[in-house]
Length: 404
Figure (cartoon, rainbow, N blue to C red):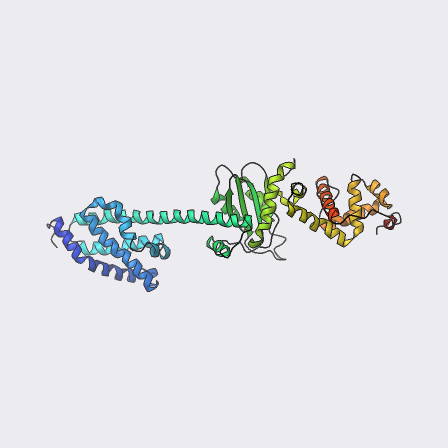
């Protein structure tokens, strides 16, 4: 084609060879791009439609370059879902490069103006591709955020349905082990990406929910703990301390550990109940375990706290040995005095000391500490309401210095 032809003649010629250009482009894609060859026929066809739309759009753009704002809708409107699901941005740019090369080779003898138009159009189409993928990523991010908030709300409320597992899977949840829920104040500027990086560093995954002024994290281990990893793995409290800087000011409460995500409602309810009463403990650490706030929660009417106190303290001691339960009750009633307790029970102070050690071994709480004594006192009161304690009798008496 001679270079002295008018723009109208050039346009007419381009329209004539557009089908040829599309065919050459598809062949070049098959010859040069392995990812294109490996695609199923349906997806290859969708990508071919995009390449064909790019050539058609170029001809329209060459006729009137003011159509630039419509480039993205003209080209990527051919198969947007197929393109975004099956082809990455890098692969899309490779597609654009191959298409431009085919067109350049075919029209390289047809004047500088046409070649310059191809270069300008290739720039516009590359920017359009980047914009399409950026918008898709933004839309997916907003969708993921809404889906994540829905999942966290379901966990907090305990209202599970058959769709919850698929929603969790859609979020890419990597947790396969134990789970805890952490509740605190939301910061003014929430750094979601930093929180997720911290979780990955701790070999955990998180779900993030913001409810008003509260920030709720569902923390899950990447893998369940076994006998070999039990001693080296970080505890959830240690994880909470690592994530503490990303919360706002105020109390930070960690719910108890549960076996899996479907059980997380138990941890969530304990954490939320603890968060609502944490101010009643003047010296509460940050973060604090929800089970360390059992007395405050029980006084506030939390049925889970009341049940936990009875099930973890009163019932195990009563089942193990009523003597331990009576000794603990007497020790707390006598202001944690060994001598006064020994006098009431008609035993030696060493016997009281030994029994208190056994209490700690059975339930894990030490009655000699002021905070733990409060927890134990609350448990005894609640347990005694359900099953009154028997008063000590001479039957408890042991020879001085012995430890029954």
